[in-house]
Length: 371
Image (cartoon, rainbow, N blue to C red; front, side, top):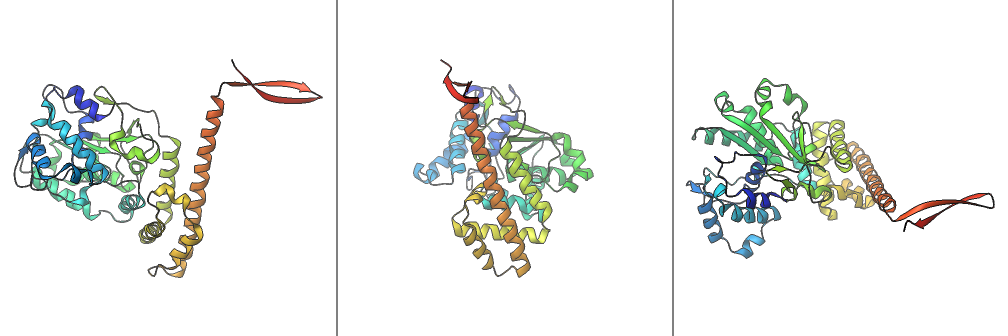
């Protein structure tokens, strides 16, 4: 089951009858990927009316041509609009700002998240703070902030940096597989004021959600997807009104997150920006989309592309070549190691057992069907 099944099971309960929970947070953070321009920006509308307006504005073909996460968000909107729980939720003060939206596990997505380490605060964080401060003052009552991927990072930043009067109204902040912050961020007094209200939720193969640093203990969710596609919140599994959880991160998550964070610590802020710009340039010119696919890069062509970058001096080109060689070698080694582990696991689960016999003074091991 996922959040769509949750909507079917609990859609008849209002928020008064059943309090807001972690799965509701994920639903709202995904609804944010729908474009409500000319629907909820100049007026306040119920989610039901907003859905009717949205589907009247766009044909099904136009919706299906959107990016995948917006297609799923539109489907989620339709299902929510048909329930007692969500149909009367009021949408208002909407703005369409792509700076607020989440990132993914593409090379560009990883670069956007890595920016948070060498450029802090980033423009999106400042804009999110202004938006939150201005709109929240127009309304009364308790506040829950939530966001997926970079959106979760912006939610935390806004909660930490807002006025004390707003802080008192915040009851929870949810960051769904969101990149973290520089270490010094957690020493700030205004962070300590809000830290107990922050909830970090990530899948077991989290990459984006483990970039930089977090202070909150994560709730690790089981995903039906494999590998880096677990960043897709639609794959997160639900049991009743809670997430299905795992005890710890898997090996892929540990390897890639440690690798990226070590890289961030190794290179200076100025070089880090240049490095990720260069990596993005190389990837685009070689048709590489996902960060983990750097193992498939043609090393000779990649090194030639680095030489063609005019913004790098000879020393930087040499350093970045060495880093890229190491990245490709290490990711290839890890990839092959994982394949070997899968192969061994398959062999161990085959219906055979070992039998040892002595022939001519030698021990011969063969396989015998257990049946």
